[in-house]
Image (cartoon, rainbow, N blue to C red; front, top):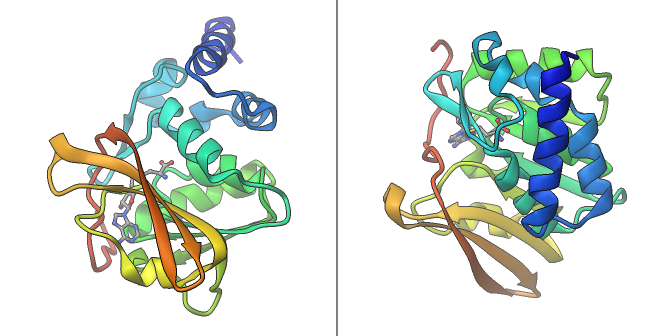
Length: 215
Ligand code: SAH
């Protein structure tokens, strides 16, 4: 790795620590997974900035702080089965898969999914199962999940996904109709009801229905 990228990575990890990211396993994984592999070569030098970057198909790789925040809030451990909706670059999936037992991830843009799959193989990450489809429906065959994370903004509570949570399980999802009023929201299943907690204002690309073969 170029010296400047290495230095920027150290600085990013320090930034995360100073912004209440304190899970040591998570910090180690964020330091180990090469974010530069998940961004377009044109943005390589910006890989360790705390910024969302374009990944094609009009989508973005999330800010490292948001990836860390959502992962930490989910309290992921190596016995859990986790579902991610919105594979995108695959970066959040690679981080999460390093902390859980099995990760299932769904993407509606085929070219993005193919690129992400190639990176998982390159990094020898074998506990990720991918699916090209509409993640709003969840993954019924694999449900229930201990944890679910949605990395695109839902207009309203995604009921299908809540139903695919185990009792005691947690779902984290940005919810909001417009850019200005999206909030990362956490739901915990308690039997047949859910407790919700509004955590932080954010800007995510929208969760959309249907699939896209070429883009
Ligand atoms: N987790 C990604 C974030 C990518 S941005 C990363 O680490 O890079 C959000 C992604 O959600 C986009 O790739 C978008 O195509 C995808 N998406 C939006 N709606 C979706 C849906 N209904 N099902 C599956 N993926 C969806």
